[in-house]
Length: 354
Image (cartoon, rainbow, N blue to C red; front, side, top):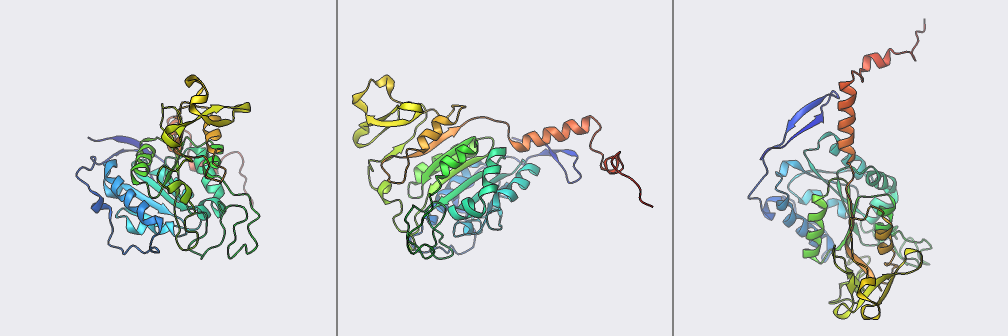
């Protein structure tokens, strides 16, 4: 099966690009590079890498059409270990580099790997604008609530009061909630998963890959050296505070699904015993709501005490992607005879200096 797209070439003109046939018969081993995987023993990055490599064959995209771009940090090593094209870029700027690639090469599947420090500190502006523009890239944020590569300083997601090498008396900062941040930036696809739950993580990756536009996935990731068991309360079997979101189904959690959600004042979501209210009052999860306020209310259930921590897809809504809009704009300008660089340089707002 062949697909065709009109894409800008190097001269700014549109050219017809025929994609290669879908790759079939690929397996996880085909996406393992010859590089030695070097993370600390027990690091959650190993589990994420294995899940990612096992998922990539499902794309049915040739390895040369898959690109993995990272910034700086422990997570940023991942492109070395995946046998595709990719690059280890600069601190916080992976979304910017990925934007340039995705807008000029719509035939590629572009994935961004980042950490909570890389994406939310120096890279904060790049992240929110890539999401706001709805660039067709998939961003995986590995959140271990610490700076690992530089040996244990507090990060933008570290809890208030966190004692680290850079905050010996405890952090004073209010931490970011990455899902809330992405929803506030009007991201069209927002999800959360856990490093050790391979089945769930791969289901979220699959949903992100199917989404046309920017996809943001926060992945709870353990750092056994500098912030061990940061997510322990929700990794226990049948963790009472873990809320698994399933589109079209009532939001139920706790022992035997005994808890549910209802709407409180001002749209706040309130946990209640499910049998204490009529079934019609229980919230049914809907990722397709155009207004992000429902998804945002879900994200605010997670207040750091793990009493109520949702995972899964929070929002998935259609909106034209930036690369599609850009290609259409260039085509329109060309069709109207506009966009001649020589004419622009010699236009009315120029003058000669003798």
